[in-house]
Length: 480
Image 1 (cartoon, one colour):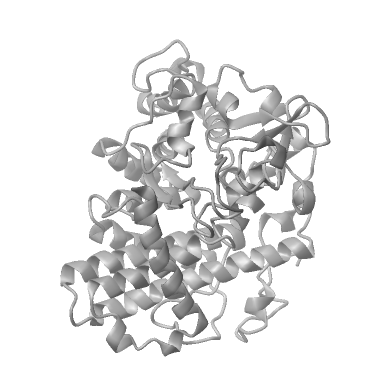
Image 2: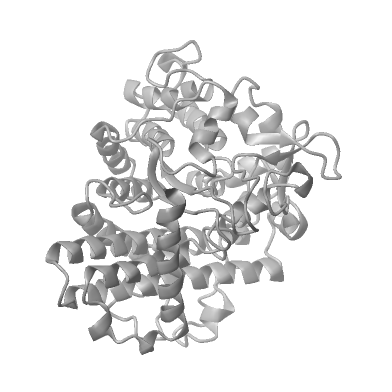
């Protein structure tokens, strides 16, 4: 069923993206955006850009996984694990990500602008698709602002203008919040198909946006709405391999999925990040593997000090000598031994799952209340119990005790658990930046000094060379 649904969806994505990307003005707006099917095809084009190999499907998570305290980049990603600067190869890569993000934004703007003009589409469908486009536009700007800070804001109001000045980060966040308020109101209670957003996905993204800005009470309350909805539960785990029910290539959906980017085992329709994880000799990816990231079980303190009884450690890493010694480990979170090509793994990209939300709630509640609450501790313990193969909602001998933690030590604990839980999901670097502890934690784990310039990516030549409203010196991020 997953392959049938996503093949159909993928064909829509490919065809619509090609039309929009190659010659957007050739689309006759007055004849294309008239029916629900046509607006849905245009909405699918937003996903095409976001989930592409140059964006969240490959280059983006691969870049971020070289920035962590638990792993090291290899090959062309080695320089990233020095935390000093980007070389030309990686400057080109982040430029490709920028272009893909803005293609998604342009495609979202087309839907937002033109869907209400349709002559054979119901008002309910217009509301739904515009809400979905605003959700995806907000998501895209959220990735941009966290990696580049302020960026040019392009909306349906100015989408035909080429020269747009750089907006402040605060202005970008203002647009994100406005879009999510609309999406939260207008998206359906349940997605029409797995991989499309619901109002609960909008609430989760809104909680994360509050969270990243340090608005902890708002983040706590929005996350609590999702928790209390009863829509999601942690996937049960009793042995390490049960995590394949979450991350495996044949999973269609699960009780933990809030918003995932969906992929399928077809050429150019799969999750390319899986290719980055493996060595060809391991045969955990059908096309081989780049083994672009690795760690060392004895030299890396995160792995060395991680309790071996934690099933996330057993499931998440495997031993493979890549020429650097017998202690080398590669990530096993995503595998597809019969993937049909480098971009043909069937695993999905879990952008937001229930475990993320519980850990977000735990930290936000403690920060908002100047210390952990019983509810915050319970949210953390649910994730921790599952990691040890216990029933998530039942007290266990592995539980952390509320009396043992104060405001600071509890946040430290949650940050550590988030690091274990979200490995190889491109979330750790943003967590470290968000907390202001990136330099401290990277230095302690890998002995490297993080430069200030490394905290943001450079605005690419594709923008600076063609947007005359930007000054290549004044508007570039520091150090580039």
